[in-house]
Each structure stands twice: as structure tokens, then as C-alpha cells.
Length: 319
Ligand code: NAP
Ligand code: GDD
Image (cartoon, rainbow, N blue to C red; front, side, top):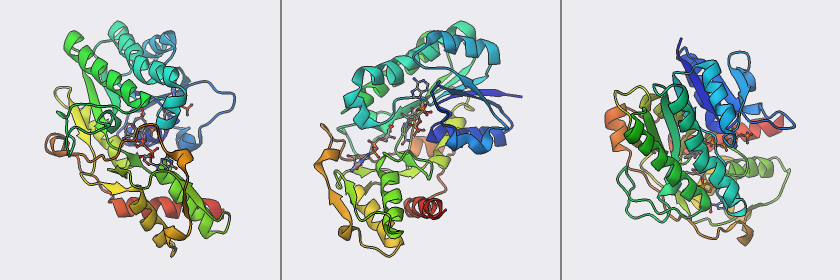
């Protein structure tokens, strides 16, 4: 039975990837960092089928021990300090986890078993102030936050371990992907949760930042499939994963509010508190390489995604 070790198992993508790997017959080892209260909400339904172990990307020894003990054939590195605003308030921590953490896990692979296949969760935030439209695997990076800078490091160290040590190390440059399991601080979930609360009379307004920012949003369940496909190829490579279309935060609001019969203009309040020191104005992917080589296709459209998230928050809050 193939064994996959997944860092970031308690996160959005960790939960969807674990589900997919179980369906494909893997033994799944999920790495979670120690906390004073358990935060297994997203993997509650999987706890009988996966093994959750303690480890931390800031602790080299824990990563070495886990690889020795569980002998994975594939490692998916999804763990990160992943929230862009926090990367300005905690830039050194973000660099330590999101950048250096990648080196620590690659070092563990190099020492324990260089045949392990490795997936790095790279990000469209690396394109930042975009140098071309749309963005593909050859587009130069211009990160606009400590998070983006850390991800550029993670990407290049992955490429370097591939080229220097022959490790099967793939980098998936994923554009924004969302779901009902998205963290509440990210804009899509903040909107779907806000819409549900307003519809149910729990609150009267939704305070947001820059409504003109444009993102290429897809469904997380589709994107974890691309991660798995990257590790099944004959050779490791870099792949851009996205929908190939872009929408503004305002448009997300329009669809989400109108889905429950409301007009976003009556409830959304722009609050400069949510503006960023430097903004990424426009992201739009060119995923043609992934479509041709991985045969990857998304199954959920942008409109379906927005409605899925609003419906899910409505159902959750009604309970
Ligand atoms: P997420 O929900 O924020 O999950 C991040 C995970 O990393 C959580 O399980 C978190 O654990 C864990 N983590 C944080 N610091 C850690 C540490 N020091 N040691 C071990 N684990 C640690 O993020 P996501 O949306 O699932 O994204 C998964 C990965 O893809 C991240 O690397 C993210 O940067 C990247 N990415 C995401 C997107 C997107 O749109 N979602 C796009 C491109 C790339 P706790 O639960 O304990 O906090
Ligand atoms: N979070 C948030 N909250 N964002 C807001 C708000 C708000 O109230 N109002 C407007 N926005 C705008 C942000 O300024 C940004 O331009 C856009 O909405 C998206 O913000 P987030 O949802 O926080 O995501 P992100 O694009 O910064 O980062 C996400 O996607 C990256 C991939 O491009 C994260 O998942 C990263 O980890 C990931 O790498």
C-alpha cells in the first residue's frame, strides 16, 4: 500500500487531499503541530481512516523522525503560514515556516530516503505585481508580501533539490482555491459567512477592504487532484493550476448576495483597515500545460463555487 505523508493536514487542502488519497487506496499520515486545543474540525470525518502525528516545519528533528518511522513514498508539503496579512505582522515567522520549512523537509527526504516523491504547495502570490497576463510557468516572479517572498524561496529550493540531488520534487503553482472549509479570514469565506449571517438576521453589515482586487478562484477539491497527478508523472516539474479566468472581490459579493435575494451594495462597507501595504491587483492563470500534460480539468465553475460556499454557511448557521 502506498503511504503519503501530508503536512498541513488540519488545513483546507490537507482535508481534501487526505480524502482523495484514501479513495485512491493510500495509507495517509497527517502531520499536525501541537496546540493546546485540538483543531481537527476539517478532518473530523476522516479520523478513523488516517493517522495524525505531531510534527512542525520549524523542527528539523520531528520531520526526520516522521520519515524514518512511517516510510512514506510521497510527501505533500501543504503546511505554511498562509495568510498574507499575517505575513506583514509576523514576517520572520512566515519566512521560517513557509520558506525554510521547505528546506527542512527536503533535507529530511535527502537524508532518510531520496526516492520519496515530494510536492511543494507553491502559490500564484509569487507573481504578485504581475509581469505578464495571464501567468504561466515561465512568468517571472514579483512577490508583493513576505508570504509571497517566502513562497518564491520554497519554489526555488524545490527546483534546486530536484536539479542538485535528483529528488522527484514537483512545484504546483496554485491560484486561489476555496471551499466551504476555507479559513474564515480569507475574503471568499468571509463573504459567504457574512452573507449567511445577514440573511439570517445575525448581523447587518459586512466590512471588507479592496473590492477591485481580481483573483482566479477555483474549488479546492479540484486542485488537490492536480497535486496528486503531479506526483504520478514520469518526471518532476512545475505546473500552474487555475481556472484561466479572473473575477473581482466585488463580483464575488454580487453573486453571493444575489444568491440569497439581496443586493451587496446595501450591506458591504469598505473599511481601510483591510487594505494591504502592497496589493496584488490581478491574477489570472494560463493552466494549459497542466491541462495538456496532467490531463487536469476542474469540475466546479466560479458561479457554482460561490453558491456552494453560501449554501454551506447558511446550512451551518441554521443548525
Ligand atoms: P491553511 O488552511 O491555512 O492550512 C495551513 C496548514 O499549515 C494548517 O494545517 C496549519 O496548521 C499548518 N501549519 C502552519 N504552520 C505550521 C508549522 N510550523 N508546522 C506544521 N504545520 C503548520 O492553508 P490551505 O489553504 O490549506 O493551503 C495549503 C497550502 O497551499 C499552503 O502552503 C498555502 O500557502 C498553499 N497555497 C494555498 C492556496 C489557496 O488558495 N488555498 C493557493 C496557493 C498555495 P494549524 O491548523 O495548526 O494552523
Ligand atoms: N482577507 C481579506 N479580507 N481580503 C480582502 C478583504 C478582506 O476583508 N477585502 C478585500 N480583500 C482582497 C485582498 O486585498 C486580496 O486582494 C483579495 O481580497 C484576496 O485575499 P485573500 O482571500 O486573503 O487571499 P490572497 O489572494 O491574499 O491569498 C490566498 O491565495 C494565495 C494564492 O494566490 C491565500 O490562500 C494564500 O495562501 C495563497 O497562496
